[in-house]
Image (cartoon, rainbow, N blue to C red; front, side, top):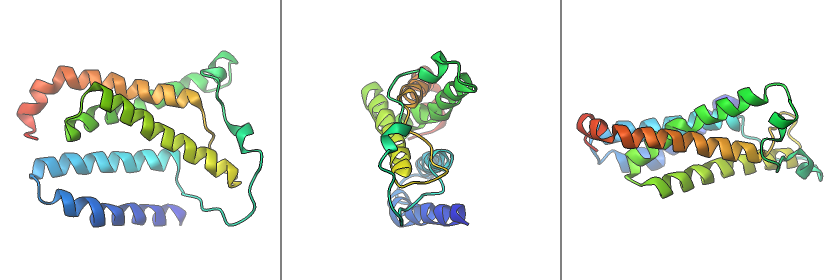
Length: 171
């Protein structure tokens, strides 16, 4: 039931804030902006949902759940570490393509925005551990690196495909 509420909230935010603003632009730009919004909602689904709200006491040891050592799990041969790195790179690749397409921003803005988006997710995960969420995920600096790498990779693909994309999508 928590997921339904979260998705309803995201749909409400879309229609109250974004659709009203984007409805005045071309249908193609509306479609691409909406695609970016849906993509971000799906990333939030994978990384944060259901959203938790603290009602009880807090866990004072939430920093213990965080990993500030890059690629620690991979070096320690933790099961699934390589797969997690690969999935984090893949997860943020669409951002590296859609963000510059919708904002017309360049390399620095795309990398900085990806890093900040990823940092926001990691901090929310850290807070969910602080709130004592039993299903919380953890802050991991490796995720920041791999998410940013994924977006950077697809940004480079965007640069290569920009002439073709600009002919297809008049944004």
